[in-house]
Amino acid sequence: MAQVPNTVDYIVVGGGTAGNVVAVRLAEQGNSVLVLEAGKDASTETEVRTPGLGMLNMRNPERNWNILSSPQKALNGRQISLPRSDNSFVQVHNLRSDSGSNTAGKSSEGVVV
Image 1: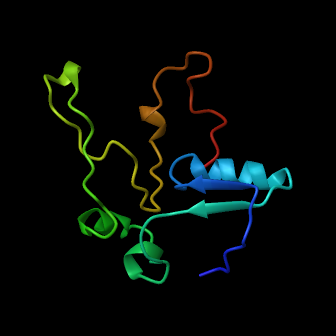
Image 2: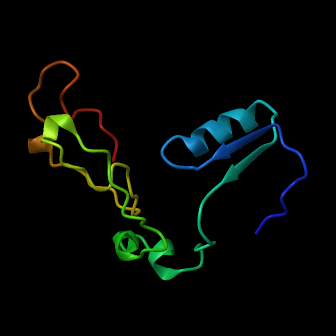
């Protein structure tokens, strides 16, 4: 683990969907930033380092805390599991035929994959 400085300009709690982006933007402005994440360092574990195996983390209680949303009125009081995103190093490309219409701004022309 990296040496933690005694003082920093900003502390970002959780990298998540936006936390790491916020941290980078703050650092780009010359600020010192500390990002805190829960759990142990799993960066050497196979299911973390291998593309496509990331979904195995969903079954690992050390990485998936099975957090549920609050009961949703629009869902008759049901709760939603995984109300956040779990990434697994997978990128799915759509077929050109799945791109919808050729309406302005909605065609697949110019998409770089």
